[in-house]
Length: 184
Image (tube, rainbow, N blue to C red):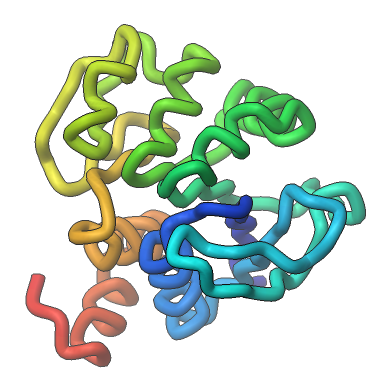
């Protein structure tokens, strides 16, 4: 049975952080669904690129999720953090031990929900102060229990490969890295 991941997109999400995760997971055979938090599938990236998502939040059943992912970017991260149906889903999923992941500014959403208290975490440099009670790290990718965080656009491939390794094993992550000519 393939793994199922949902990545949540809002207007102003960082293109590379969102789409690198989608691209590499699909190469790995992970069933990843892009989900708009708007009432329409159309979202606009932080660099004004229009994009159609696979689904709309209000019409999607997340009960089969193996992982939930938040890309960064502004103002996308603010919209994600302010969307109560998403924060409610994240809280429920997190409290059941589900794997959650965020990159760039998006780990601040996890911090605001209390998920990073006492956990090692990272974020975009200007967002590090907003990680609440997290144990701050400058590593490219930090995994602490069921929470994965990463720094930003420049770490998007490492972040994506880490998520693949968590879902399908390190061998699959290495295979994908090699297939895109990425040295780890």
